[in-house]
Amino acid sequence: AQKITQTQPGMFVQEKEAVTLDCTYDTSDPSYGLFWYKQPSSGEMIFLIYQGSYDQQNATEGRYSLNFQKARKSANLVISASQLGDSAMYFCAMREGRGGANSKLTFGKGITLSVRP
Amino acid sequence: KAGVTQTPRYLIKTRGQQVTLSCSPISGHRSVSWYQQTPGQGLQFLFEYFSETQRNKGNFPGRFSGRQFSNSRSEMNVSTLELGDSALYLCASSDPTGGPRDTQYFGPGTRLTVL
View 1 (tube, one colour):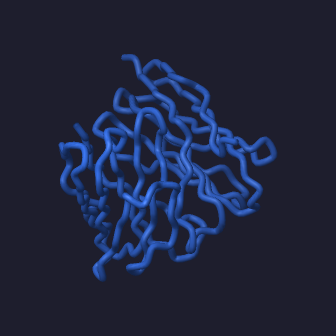
View 2 (cartoon, one colour):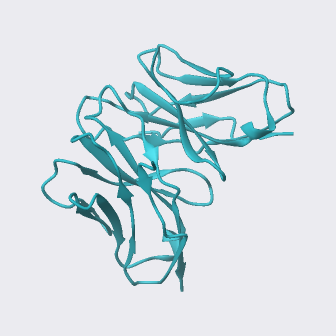
């Protein structure tokens, strides 16, 4: 079974509008971390935001926020005020366990976001 | 701080050859992980090195190997290259203090083409 599911094949958003990118996950480990990365056409993976399974509040980093619904096992990324430079591939990833002894990330297939001027 | 660097950025090899990719982590980071990215399989974990020891390994054949040096720099080697090894190889470093964040920071990748 897939551990990280990103089903939206491609998303389009108008510049300055908000967009939500979906991610669902599957794990039996009570301790895990969820990450979102951005990959522009250049190929580098850029870390955006992190949410821990025990975090009481949804994570926020500038224009990025995470809509974390633990019971539904979803961790959707919300990008507010989209910019042309946000056009890229976005990956949701999970690390099971508390880190330290296990840094392995499991990635979803990714979502292509295109921002229209 | 300088980010993760990978060399070379592009590489073209022929089937049967071997290749070595290099990764220099962020200063102070002791964990280095390698991932393979292909259009068909997406991002797949290869292995992780910490303090010169392989700590985790993905589901790849033995042709894929790696090592880490005392300065935390890491190399990845692929022997007897196959066409299917054509991919973007990404290296990531982290400072696994044991905390839950343990964020991995990625380099720009090495794009390997096997002809």
